[in-house]
Image 1 (cartoon, rainbow, N blue to C red):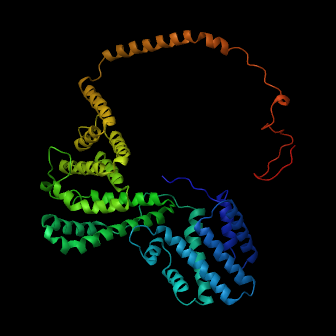
Image 2 (cartoon, rainbow, N blue to C red; image 1 turned 30 degrees about the horizontal axis):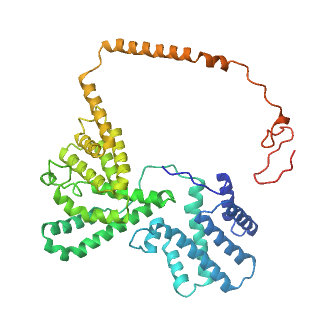
Image 3 (tube, one colour; image 1 turned 180 degrees about the vertical axis):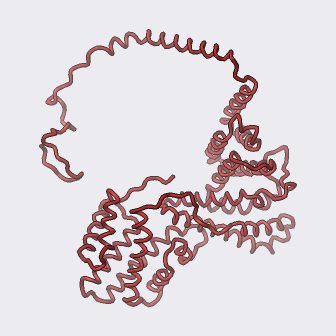
Length: 455
């Protein structure tokens, strides 16, 4: 769920009016000046979104270009600065991760024309482009802002559940698994497989950065933590697929019956990749543990070995978190399991029940809760509903009614005081100076911050 955000306009109608001043007639200089005045007033109230800041910079230069015979070099510098700030402001917030991505790649994901990126590059690192080219770039930028900011904000499309499109991660994970499996079976191959493993790790991090950009382009989210969380959720979903953390072959899913850990070979294969992602994104283990628990309680897989292996991987993620954060992770995972598991589902989802028992047994504060729930489950099985329960309910009701009568008798003196007439309110003249109710006949509305003489 997206958190509410502060906007400078009081209603969407104000933003629509601003859009009309800017785009209805490109030759109406007076309307453009009113739009700039409105933007300046909004800037005094709160910080403007980057799209509006870029609109103000571009529109200011366009007005200067149309109104006066400004020096050509001055106009070229003004146009170039506005275009550079537009592209950088759109791309830089989405540049996350250890490995930097090209501006062109990020711009392609958010739908920014590639030639604007090239124009920005030329204005920054090469000879300053001509005035005609910069004018065309400004016009294209204003059109892009209309299509990608103003219109979607004024008339938002109905929300859909379709997720942003991402390139598949399965080939990268398969490449990593093949190389890591060879190293796990023969340590002498580590040097030979090192470039492949390093390339796969870089590709995973690049994929996470692309996922964060896709999340931002999907809902214009301004919270980097929310975008990163969504990207980690998608990575966890990819690791959930059979053939990733859970081997395809059932015989490879065997585990040690004494402990609650995934197969040793699977841990040896995937540990480096998981630790690498955790080092870059410290919340990854917590996100993956919660995602795996949610998958278990919603499982429709008829293969018990898959769920059993998945539960052990969830326990591995929980056990691998830092001690300072483990209590919160335990609470989140246990809450998800409690919600999904009930008396009816506990027998149908043994792997989730086993995971719940493991986490509760490892946390003293949760052990008592687990014991109570198990006792309630057993009592619910051994004592089904019967006609005698009606008498028990009537006996409990009589006890409650008797307690209420005793409480009423004990509270009788208080009731006598409560029915005494309230004291007469003090007159207005005796009240200390401060807030008082205004005289309706003399009061009239005024904007906050405007001085109005006392009535």
